[in-house]
Length: 391
Picture 1: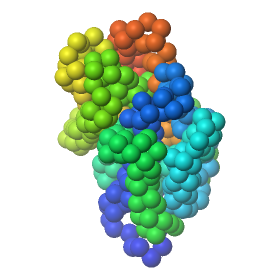
Picture 2: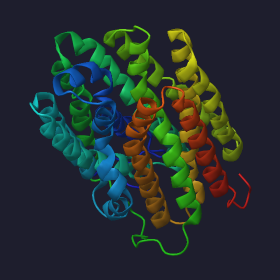
Picture 3: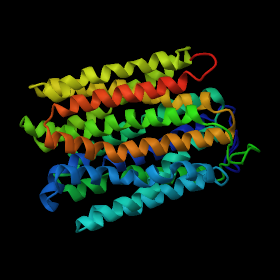
Picture 4: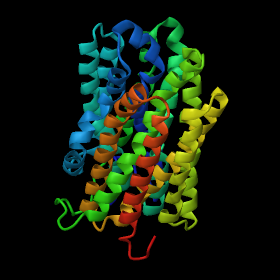
């Protein structure tokens, strides 16, 4: 597949699209993480329980959890760049409403509206890469793209730390800047990007490996958001203030980036996805420090290690989609399934973890991370085993 905005020319590799597409993804990640560093102010203003706060964090992914796959197949037939820009515009409007909303109902409603824009961005981003990039550049772009959630959450935490002194509304307003920049970059540069393949029909036949991959991705993806959502509470239990907790959350979020980039580099050198995915087993070990250590430095170190492993495994899963897709139509379906399943995990993860630690205590986090990791890894290995080369 190959496409380019009219009048822009078409470089041989398509590297020119990675930066604006990734900026759009970052905007979605920032939106997802907007309220994580603002927990104290929000709970004080609206009296939120940990579970209610978890739903506020994850509600943005409800639309993607319900609609990502059918929307992905449908959108591939139109102007991908215009759809990407439209998603950013919806996110910008909804985010503004959240920053000025005066009631919990308004916040939840605007969060659900923002989810429609989030859906368009996270589904369309990989499709733009597939339309414009050669296979090697696409693998690099997907490895980079896989980091948009943790990096976006880190940027949201930085905005929270910078704006918390002026109130949570000011901090929420700062999180809109990446979205505004992304809209300015994608609208003029990517409009007219279309899939030029003649395979526009919905795929037929079995999609078992892609389904297994997506289910595994869902479980692994929910771990990073859930652990990051709990970090401010863990810090508060150890006497860490909101500003310091938000800063630490930002730093820990960034730990996924080297993991994702390392995965891309190792696969480019011939690393086998199934072998690289075994890194997931590091996460339950790291969770021991996150949820049982008595020292804040040990908690944050464990969280950083968990996020590095998480970022590597998610990047491997993203890059495995083209290996399991036997046609452009199947590729669209695969990305849609991945986003939809990952969004389901992101919706359910923070409130589920919040409920568990509220009812049982922090040690419940260790068991949840262990069970989710083993199940997610098993599903991925089952999907990758379908490859004839055993990769």
